[in-house]
Image 1 (tube, rainbow, N blue to C red):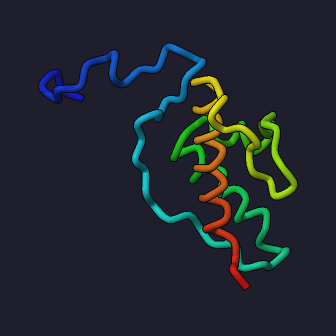
Image 2: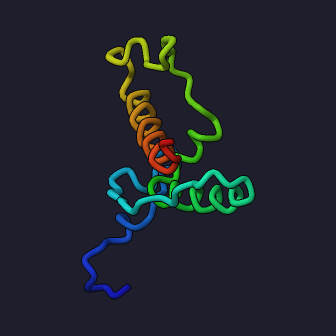
Amino acid sequence: MSADSGISTSETKNTDHNTSTSDKNNYSVRPTSFNGDDEQFSWWKIKMYSHIIGVDDKLWDLIEDGDSFEVDTEGIVTDRKSLTPAQRKIYMKHHRVRGILVGALPHA
């Protein structure tokens, strides 16, 4: 990149490992839809992994590790208003990745 690009080094490098590299990412490419074919699942999972990491590098961690919010019988957080700012950030990321996955699954 040229020095005239207007992007400083601090904007392109993430040195804080507690935050996402794409907190302000507005990545909006539609993910690959899963067609239900068992033989294609591995391929779809790799494509989804790449898509989700492209959206936000912390979202895949939520898929693998889950979250620890107390939910009711319908899966809704019981007291969302009492979440700390850090918990609220995780809560929002959870719903972002959930929306990506739900959108990639068939609605039949």
